[in-house]
Length: 404
Image (tube, rainbow, N blue to C red):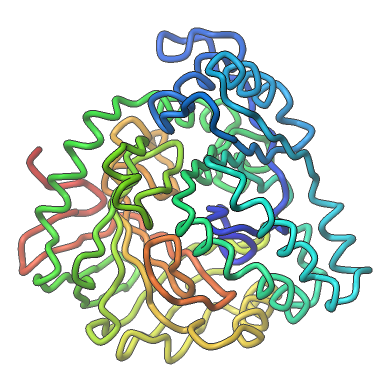
């Protein structure tokens, strides 16, 4: 979510992360349309189950008008009510640079007034210029996000369904450069992921959930030096399989959220169980690399954080230090399960969703059903991980090892 995550999730709400324009789907058997009509129909139907009379809020930027138009028309055809908002990153940066902190609460006040009205939210992801906010003071960012921190919980209580289109893989020149991919490679894997078979995802998710029950000791290791032991918090396993079902709506909480491309099984970490070291050989932060980011974990908390010297690491530490309590908690473990999202040969993909991907989260965890409301979060991608549950491999050297 937002500035600390290199590939923004936008889980609760942050208007700070820059917008990322969505490129059109390629003309392939998986996405034959030359516009966004098929994608809009799938999002509104298969993913969200939008009904006549529901109010659907769409957050987008000027580069996403084709997708917005397709969603707008498809909503009208369903008898639903579209509410569209078009914003851009420089506007939010200027807010932080010129608007007094005392006025930040007006933004949250507007969002709170919309919550009783809106049934569904669609976010088109934003990350076109990851370095845009690097010259904004960490304390100013923290103050702004603090005013928004309660919105996610309020939306969950309202049982608002939400989908984020992008999930860190939105095709664009800037995003492709950050991920060390060509634009064509990124576009291909993004649309393959969006077009995956959601029933297969659900089946694979069930197999992963069966392999990592809360009672088992999980051990995560990586070639870079990660060696971490933990257990999962009871009854917190969730899945983003691209579909919010009527059962999910009844259950509420984290089950009201999904991301596209879909394909994740995630759970809260038992804070008393996590011990060891996490080494992230390449951590993306504000458009720059933090090399060999190393976290020491004791009692579920980050007790030390080091990396190769760089301005990016200095700023990451400054943002961490400016954040309130809860910033140091190792919060969520995430498994990728989408077999249609694959790194090109010879390349490494920093993403949540490829089958066999392993990701850890530090800090706020409301999106996963937790109660940590700090303004800080950090995404730790661990490619080529091995994860065992009571000694049995769940992931081995980046390959998912479960029977569907």
